[in-house]
Length: 414
Image 1 (cartoon, one colour):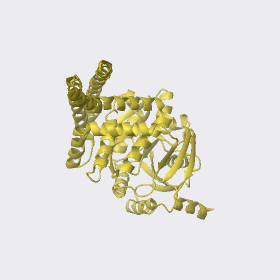
Image 2 (spheres, one colour; image 1 turned 120 degrees about the vertical axis):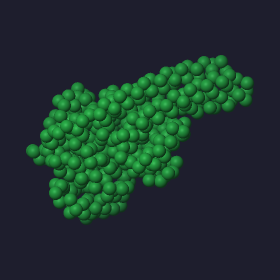
Image 3 (tube, rainbow, N blue to C red; image 1 turned 45 degrees about the vertical axis):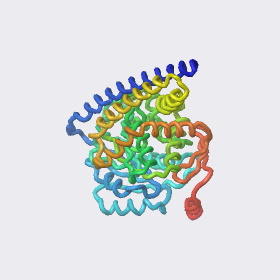
Image 4 (cartoon, rainbow, N blue to C red; image 1 turned 180 degrees about the horizontal axis):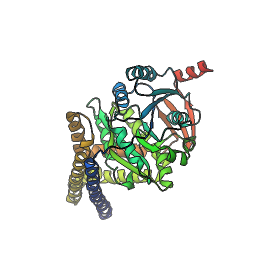
């Protein structure tokens, strides 16, 4: 028991120290967010922007998402939707919005099927290969994101600094139904959103980012995406390698509706960490260590407290350490939620529902987070939007399976 007690006390000391440091980090992020919230929207020259939106199928709230993209309060932008096939259901919906908003320049790019990279990456490569000369800024959004009306203007404004390589937002998951799986995936995602703010932990999220065209070309995009499954982590690496900043703009935090069953939720979570393992392995190891430590503090403390209470051991040690950790984590979570709330355009009832679960079910969320990280540790295969990929390396992607409709589209095109 002495050895187990020493091991637990050592890990608990590290866990409590990390919890304190992350609480300090959350406070610093609050200061950063407050500064961004107080920033005035002074008029600025709107450089010409091309906004790229890869699409595959009709996402949840797809029409609301399109509405938000067509109604951006920005004087000089054009939309480019990219689909793999003219038969994609999203195309008909987009064409209807083109007619509804004729004043917004918009085109639909048919990229065809990918051969040796992710379908989304292939779409982006095709669409960004020949950018019009007058375009000065490239912006990117996902079709399952619903940005606010000033999203584009606030993001583009921050690209004007010469030291800025890329400006990114992030997503806040909004459960369609109040199920356990939806709340768990929302809690996991929203915790990651809370790490963004100061420069150290900023990663580009592919559903909300912008970059000056000259930087995009200097970093050798779209060629740098060749053979890749992932788009945004490659952008993060390229920007940092060039000595430029990855800037997070809280005003570009976007709502994204989700509706997962447990299998789909676990597949989604594994896919996120799988890509991190392939493209930024150091971040994956950090995620594994963090998830393991959190579970020591939650699950490990509970098991030891019960076991030692039964056997007459020092059960108060894990009981007190676990309680302190939970209390500190709850304070941190509440602080993060209050920090991010002003930047979210979602119903108050929905926000309260998600945040309440996140606070009180933190041990359960932490357990699923660990399962997701561990499940991504092995294997090279992943399924994304119905396509099964084999990823041999960062620039070595092979497609092993496609839905039958995609195969038929290719045959018809030939």
